[in-house]
Length: 193
Image 1 (tube, one colour):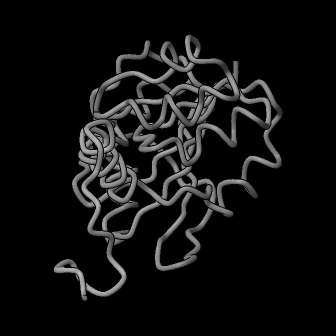
Image 2 (spheres, helix red, strand yellow):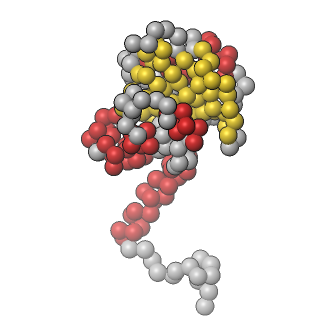
Image 3 (spheres, helix red, strand yellow):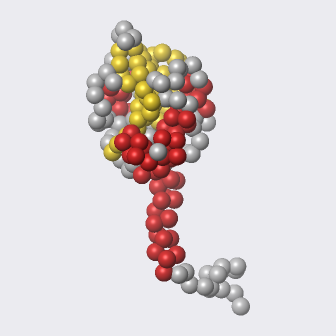
């Protein structure tokens, strides 16, 4: 006889433990699907191949840790901000430990970071459609040291240069397109400390 759930589906009822865990797992899976893909951007990895390890890097919207963990494994001093911090902390914990991951990934938005002025050498921003791109660039310019850099990934590059200029950033590398997104690098003017 065919199961009412379809061919090959189990008719066994889940145990209390399994029934309890399924909704949580489903929520976690949905959050991972909403976040950026698991693998880091090749464009980002190529850029950071020329950056000395130890540089302080802030990921303005770290999602599930797509860029944080690979950069930490390469020796960078990584920090991240996201509305939902759990997935990024979980991704970073095997590399830095759970306590350090909890300290380095904070709740926030890309346009309202809780970091001091002129604190970071680099910023990474993989912009999603719901982000305020202009506000994030202004905030990045604030937290970057003079001479600091920001690597941006966006699917909506139309006003990227206007917004970067309004934030006081200068173009350091012409945009490139890869996999339907644009990558660009900007720099905060000033002497390198």
